[in-house]
Length: 123
Image (cartoon, rainbow, N blue to C red):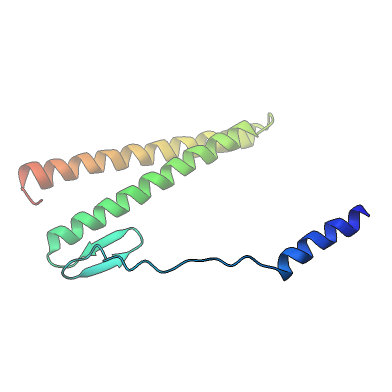
C-alpha cells in the first residue's frame, strides 16, 4: 500500500501540473546610450574610463568571491582531514594561497584608487 501511494503521488503531480501565471517584465535596461547589458550590470562603451571602471569593478568583485569560496573550501578540507597530515597540509596551503590572493586583490584596489582617482583624476 505504501509503495503504491509513493508511486501514485508523483504520477498525479505530473498528470495535473499547476499553471504558472508569469509575464516578461518590460523594464528598461540599465544602458541608456551605448553599452553591453550583462547579468552583472551594464558595461558602458561610451568612453574608455567608464568601460575600465566597470570592468575593474566586476572583475574585482568576482575575484573576491572566488577567494572567499576558496577560503571556505580550504576550511572544509582542513576540517575533514581526519588526522591525515597530507590533507591537512594541502588545506593549509590552499588557505594561505587564498588569503594571499585576497590580500593582493585588496592591495591592487588600493593602488588603483590611489593612482587612478587621487593622483591622475581618472574617475
